[in-house]
Structure formats: structure tokens, C-alpha cells
Amino acid sequence: MAERSSSGGGIGCLVLIVIVVALAIEGYSSLDSGGWIPHSEDSVITAQESWLVGESKDCTSVPLDGSTAAAEHKESGYALSSINCDNGPAHQIEIKFFGLENQPNVGGVLWRCTRNQAGFTCKQTGTWPKSYQRY
Image (cartoon, rainbow, N blue to C red; front, side, top):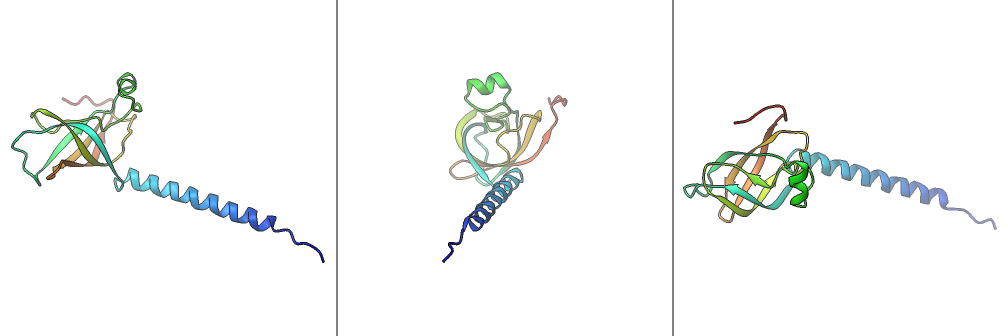
């Protein structure tokens, strides 16, 4: 009796696994860039004491430059380090973000942040270019 080789089936299975993994990675990346994947980060946020639970505010952040990012052990363009929402004091707190963590090619990031019972949730609403000076 002749033996049959199953190496062709093994290669086909391996190719299928590689394709499925590639599609899963691309799908995750698309969901993340679309703001569907949350990132909980310990960040600084400015918040007045009068900010009510359930209230939302428009906020901004500026991605870290190379030297600041290195000092904070983050990637250049890290956009979740500090969020400016109002003229209140800065608070270090865990924030749930829906948006991109690293945005090295923009000058700033726009967020819509909501105060929750236990913290804040911020959803990215846009960006401004590096060439734009925001005052």
C-alpha cells in the first residue's frame, strides 16, 4: 500500500490561519481607529468642582513630542497623557478613552468627556493639524 502525504492539507490549513489572523488584526485596528475600542489610562484631566456627574464637556489634548514621551516612557505622539477641559485644577485619575492612543501626525486631539460616578469617559471627536496654532 502506498502512503499518502498530508503536507498539502497542512499548508492549506496554515495559510488559512494566517489569513484569519491578518483579518482579525485589521478588524481590530479599524475598530480602534474608529473609536470603538476603549483604553483605560491613568491621566491628568482639568475639572472644576462644579462638573456634575453625567455632564459632558468639549476637551483637548496635545500629543507628546519625542523628548516628553521618552521621559514619560510613552511613544512619541501619545495623546492620552493630559486632557484640558476647563480652568479647574488638574486631577490624576483613570479615564476611559475611545480614540487613538498615539497620534504623532496631529497637532492636537478633540475629545467629548463625560464625568461618571467613578471617573471620566472621553470620546475622540476630531483633531487639528500640526501647522494650526490653537490658543
